[in-house]
Amino acid sequence: MKFSLIVQSSPCSQQAASTALRYARALLSEGHELFRVFFYADGTLIANSQIAPPQDETHLPAEWQTLAKEHKLDLVVCIAAAVKRGVLSDQEAQRYEKPAGNLAPRFELSGLGQLAEAIALSDRVVTFGG
Image 1 (cartoon, one colour):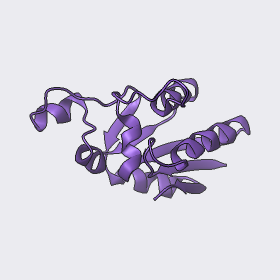
Image 2 (image 1 turned 60 degrees about the horizontal axis):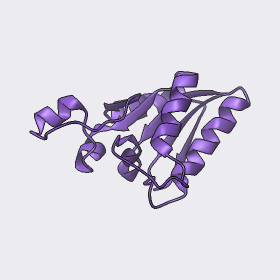
Image 3 (image 1 turned 90 degrees about the vertical axis):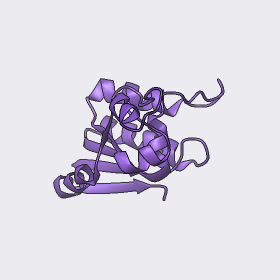
Image 4 (image 1 turned 120 degrees about the vertical axis):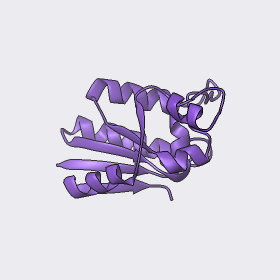
């Protein structure tokens, strides 16, 4: 079965963001396809390369990057929500005259069209947080 996930909660304040990661791993281990993970609202903070959680906590951006690398996942971050929260690619940083981008590798800024496509092409869409 083909799944897409929507992650809307902050990696720093709610359990839903880490639950989404565990859910993604479980889906993949059961042989399902994960078409796309779409990060929206405070979930876009997962794509901030400057996040540095304490050593005894899960580093969600790094964990998502590793999972994406292992399974060639599509990690899409809502551009409007991300820019609003200061998560910028190098191109967006230049556009908004900021000193540098901070979008973590393997994450891609894009629009709600990517979410619409994920909904249209997936058998199931599961939302975390919100």
